[in-house]
Length: 78
Image (cartoon, rainbow, N blue to C red):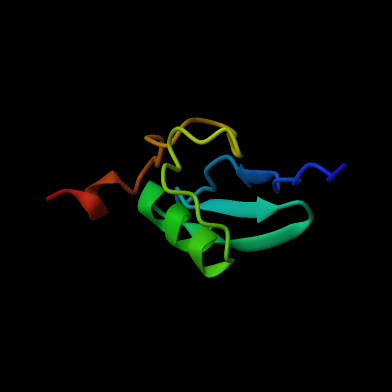
């Protein structure tokens, strides 16, 4: 019988003082995000394709959800 595929545990950490959020997989830091779109790009560059970072069960959001980027929202306004 085949072993079940283990999915990585992705964590988007609480916002830092500048509002950025560290993205990790296990003990490895994958990158620093300033918006939810950055999380998707960081995961893509790590060959972890997650199409819906806001609703994925693979991602744990700490210190706020995918809409919480204190102090950075003005950088992504249309």
